[in-house]
Length: 189
Image 1 (cartoon, rainbow, N blue to C red):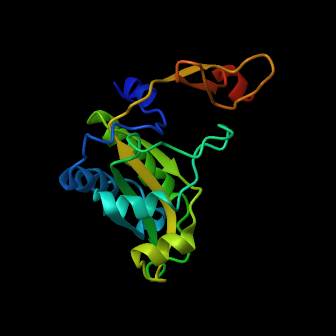
Image 2 (cartoon, rainbow, N blue to C red; image 1 turned 135 degrees about the vertical axis):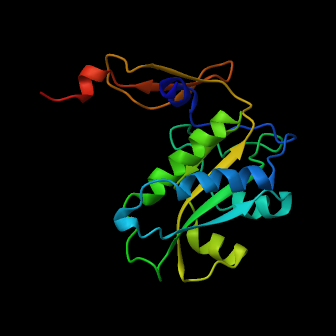
């Protein structure tokens, strides 16, 4: 059921670095995006795939991780993503990319979760450095990076407390807690 898949598709930031994700799986995930809606049906998105440890290291060093987890610099060696999908916008196809990259990113996460893989959509990217490291042409705008791997953490959804704080946090056992607003709090009359 779709609701079950959505509930299981939580942002994951720690992975089993010894369990690879194949190039074929990455291609299958990107193939899902071809079928998704695109503003004006322009289909301007392009993708860079990586599951090579050296290349992954170049990408990892360009990413910011978990702003609410103060003092956490990101996953430690052994818990880093084993694959990445970088979403680019082709400026020769479109001037703006509307919400296409958000739709594509979530399609990738849903497809990944269905395969037992988890991911994290990363918007905190040192784009100039990433462009230089991977030799990405100026023709392409770097929109998002999706980190992928077999999850090495438990993520649970809980209700937003009385204080209204939506900041995610980790408990002493390392369980990642994500507060979500109640349905009646987000629907206006």
